[in-house]
Image (cartoon, rainbow, N blue to C red; front, side, top):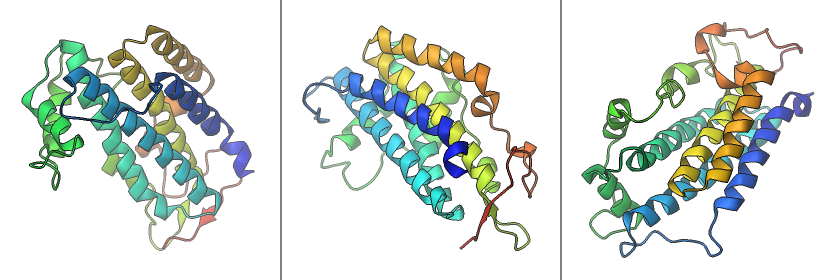
Length: 235
């Protein structure tokens, strides 16, 4: 039953992986201080997208074994990766590489002055995204991670619902399509952008829940999916 419920999730991840393979250069790119900002931006975004997909696969492994509460930290990391890729895409939207972007790239390149800490805070990244004028904020929304992850916590001694985690995983998989669009835009790959946007439109028709995940719509005991809810012990 789990594989049936996760079928669409797997299909989305596989689609993004295929597009990612087309975006990867013939030889793996390293983020180096000697490269220009555009090359480094693309290389960093690709590495984050690879990490994002790996996170989705790790969550799938945990959920398949019933370890729901253990996925919360990975979901948190996915939310940060999502914000980072949007942040890195902003110069391609408005043509301006800000000092914050330069600091982020220096950190990613392992510069001696930036190798031991992140010079750009999470608040700075979110604020820049919020202030961006050339991005569709209705599509690339900052994900309310704390509110969403709240649904994965046990309530009143009750264990976490696998069904809710599956829906949340599907939503994050959908977000991967949007991240692939931004990465393709920076790479100036119109073909992959078009393929991702078409697939996104397809998902909106067949499963609107993948597009809009509303934590408030989930009671503590989620029973709205057309299967018998299954539970995993919270640790």
